[in-house]
Amino acid sequence: MAYLENAWYVAGWDDEVPQGGLLSRRLLDKPILFFRDEAGAVKALHGVCPHRYAPLARGTLVDGMIQCGYHGLGFGADGACVHNPFGAPLKNMALRAYPIVERHSAIWIWMGEAERADAALIPDFGFNDPATAWVGKGYLTVKAGYELEIENILDLSHVQFLHPTTLGSDKVSDGHYAWKQEGETIWSNRDIKDEMMTPQLASAMGLVPGTLADRWVYVRWNAPANMAIFAGAVATGRPRDEGRETPTAHLFTPETSRSSHYWYAIAFPKSMGAVGEQMAQEQVDFLRAPFELEDLPMLEDQQANIGNRDFRQMKLGWLPGDAAGARARNLLYARIDAEVGAKSA
Picture 1 (cartoon, rainbow, N blue to C red):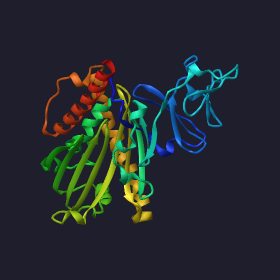
Picture 2 (cartoon, rainbow, N blue to C red):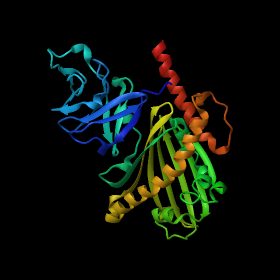
Picture 3 (cartoon, one colour):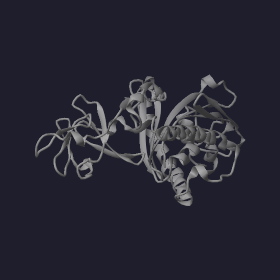
Picture 4 (cartoon, one colour):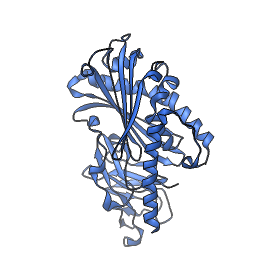
């Protein structure tokens, strides 16, 4: 399966790589090893020793050097072999190093040509910055391809049926839906009137449970699969600026063609004080239930039905809410095709 390589993917939350520790993760079917150098900066190397293909995750971090746990070869933060217990360092056994940026509470990795890794291309998830927001963070591994995840988040009409007691209501299908494209960004927007939200949602939106509300749910997509949901609500009939918007991040990175990493987060301004900190943790804990117990089984069953078929080549049905997801995937596929074409030229 071809992936978009010249793009920023999330590789983990910033607290997943401790000082002095290692994190091994498969991204785009490649084993990657993460660690922090002596200055605390996250580094990423190809996670397999070139000597006999031993997993470097079974090694150790020694004075900023990754030492293979099989024969003791050592690799520096730039991937060069810097230690050979049996002689001089071996120049022909270097590891690939990947560009890394820590931003918006996340670790971003560039899987393509290093010289094209421009940090300005990282999508804006400023609402997740720990300096200004309390950020509740979660993670799931999903045994389904990331294309299904793109469609799932961009078409939230499913919350009425898949999440009826947690995130949805019978008013969702009556809401106004529209999508638009701004450059290479896709928006999928839904406005719902006179809705009785679940108590947990109402509290997150700053409303008294049992209050009829006008809710908006606007989803932003940037390639490959980095999405934000800007959801808010206000008491029915009141101006929107009286309401509260609670942004959430939904960040997907392919593990393999049939499995994905899913990082999600909800943020509240630090100006809310201890209440915001408490809400960030309570709300991310609340979100885990519908994500893990409702979305995840559905997506994994979808993938089981698809099997090894190419999702891109499958004949699919059509509902109005499919427009944004289809357009996003077409933009993604066009960029993948361009990369494949450039490599074969």
